[in-house]
Length: 391
Ligand SMILES: *Cc1c(COP(=O)(O)O)cnc(C)c1O
Image (tube, rainbow, N blue to C red; front, side, top):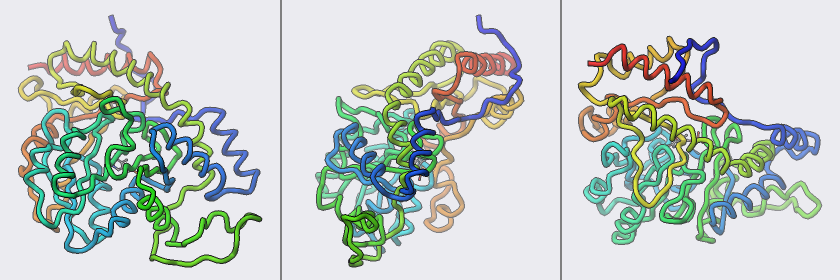
């Protein structure tokens, strides 16, 4: 039996897991004088590339920047279209807008909340210049099918891998399936550097272009400028961006990467407990497990089934808060946001699969820093709220 107790302290929706090694490494960077891009960033890139099995990795200051640079390096601009799923964070589409191109929003498959490959097919036009799947919640989208569509039309697949550090699809880690993948190391992600991101690719020329664009468009290995090996001379060959990673962030990343698999194992353990206790309540659609891939449970999103409770999602989250438990929603579908509605004419109801799921969608706290008691408290509170409001 789960003991029902009212938590004394609020359980935040998410907390990072920062260890003494990370702290010592950051202090080492501060004492060394290398606070911006330097040797630790380079080492983090090498180790991350090795982890995902990619030939190249470019460290940047966010996943958003990674996506921006990957699209810019393809030359995407006004008149072009990029296909994105509606069930994602706004960054996926915002970067398309930043380049003057049009984000073509499509629906998701259904309860897995992965991008619909049928919808991708229907959305392709002669102007489509990239397809951007999101590996929702830490499980891979249907990459074989998406890559086949891309290959058929000569359109590159640029993956939003913000949730997918450690995600495996058909025996291979996310990082090399599409033309490029961007990972996020934001505070809430499975691996965090506070703020940060990484682009991986197997294409040397494309990698060089992205690296150039990530640091002002400077043609030299610019970070070496201040070492004895470096030179003062550089040339600007493109109006690049300023999105390089700092060594302070990389210091965190080096140790987070070493612990990533154990973090993800702990996520799986908590996820299995949640599945076992919340499934039998008969109220929720739990995170769907698709074949041939793992799930690193960046999120644990559940969907309240219609007609099971007297309350809706918003009240459910409110009651969790009363029980001192934080929850969130991933995501408000892109097409419902005023900017995307007004600028591109999207409207509520346009993507029925996403809307149906969104209606009852909420993410429960699940992260390696949670204790067993914390996880018990989440399950107890959810069970109690369900029992109270069951139809
Ligand atoms: C977090 C997130 C991003 C943005 O990551 P940043 O590192 O904060 O820029 C992009 N896409 C998705 C799906 C995300 O969840």
